[in-house]
Image 1 (spheres, rainbow, N blue to C red):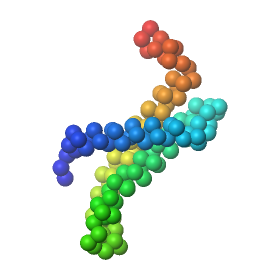
Image 2 (image 1 turned 60 degrees about the vertical axis):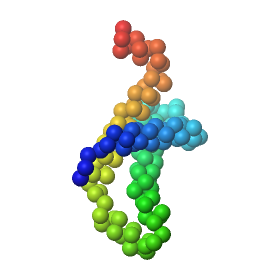
Image 3 (image 1 turned 45 degrees about the vertical axis):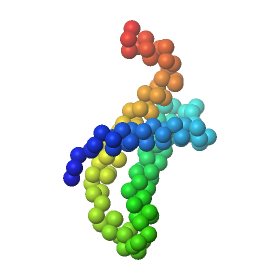
Image 4 (image 1 turned 120 degrees about the horizontal axis):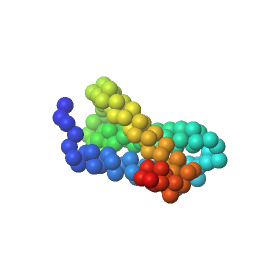
Length: 123
């Protein structure tokens, strides 16, 4: 297996940023806004993570849909047997951790305020 190239990492970061930006404008994202912090953090982390999972799967499936020379069923089963699921899911768990940290800090800043957070961190 070859390592990640810079372009792949940059595209993955851009993909995550776009998912967050798009979901932040959806009306259901602030469903638990007035609840204790644990619930909105869990809700937003779950939504970001599920959409990221689906988008990453669609990216993996894209070559199958664009190649019309073969049978879809055969390509689909071959795709599932040849995909390195342990790496895919490991990266997905890593994204879950990063999204949880991001959402936690973001929600904390929204509750406490930017000025107070800067004061706590930098005096």
